[in-house]
Length: 376
Ligand code: ADP
Ligand code: MG
Image (cartoon, rainbow, N blue to C red; front, side, top):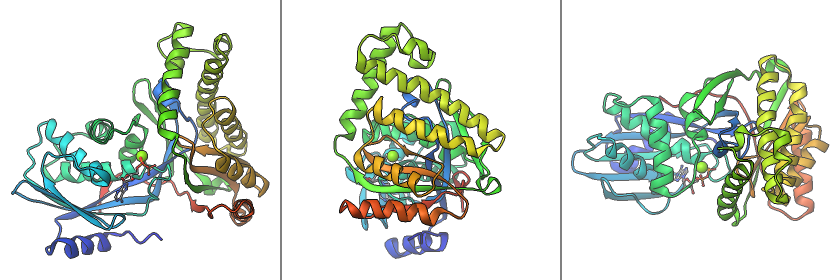
């Protein structure tokens, strides 16, 4: 249940540490509308910030001690400033480490974390956590860093501090989102373009289906896909697959690399088209692009799984006009674009198909495109 709020995170801080926090900040989770596995190919993606967010209550200390309490972990980490913790506290402590590396003089800190972003569901609870901490600490030091720099701080925290590969989409949307707007992110140069995302006016709803599964092969397969994309680009003699055309992709000799290249090249084109359709509020044509994106991720990029395929097929049968897996794959979440007022049928259809297979019931989330990280 979404009970994370400013009063509750301030109370959590007081309960954990016995004195009041200086303030509370929040950063949103996100869902990627389309443009999957394109970021590390210099491609395009189109994320939207969720209303669900991670809150952090903060007070600075002067004795070199860091404490982090998370309501989700129900634990308090304590350590010296500069250390990167093991486990979940790696995320906030790696942010402090990254800020310190850039010269921020940090004397210690107490943090209380609460979140309404489902953790580990592919909705980027990790960036919601790193970005809320980074923004809070930055503002408590009179904001020496720009939001662009904080994106880099949070990428570094995940990549080098935690050891989790992340391309920058999650951090960018968390720090630059606007309400009722998606962000077309060009991963070649990091530039962004706001794209109107007015679901309600257009008569549609977007639902997230969290399958609540995460297959353990995900990490190894992610690295393998990245290297296959590099190999495919090399076979074509281009610096990245962003530079390849659809016809060119078909000339890759190795059938696996050809399929990987086909996915990336067609997915970038679908992302471009989706942004174009959204600019003129033509949601009705977006459904087909979602369907094609899913088929491409399933058949050419081979990063889907049975649960995601069942969720997508059941959503379509329940009345969605398009559905696709979102995020890295091998579990996590799918999204379904549904006519306004018909989400109950879509949800029932997915629930039924999961129950019929004896799978754990999925979770559902309605998407409201929210704003960026901010002080509360
Ligand atoms: P995602 O970003 O898709 O939710 P990740 O695996 O990238 O999945 O990040 C999830 C991890 O981030 C969790 O396993 C945990 O270590 C950390 N995390 C995120 N949110 C919280 C939170 N509220 N409290 C504690 N740890 C969190
Ligand atoms: Mg993450």
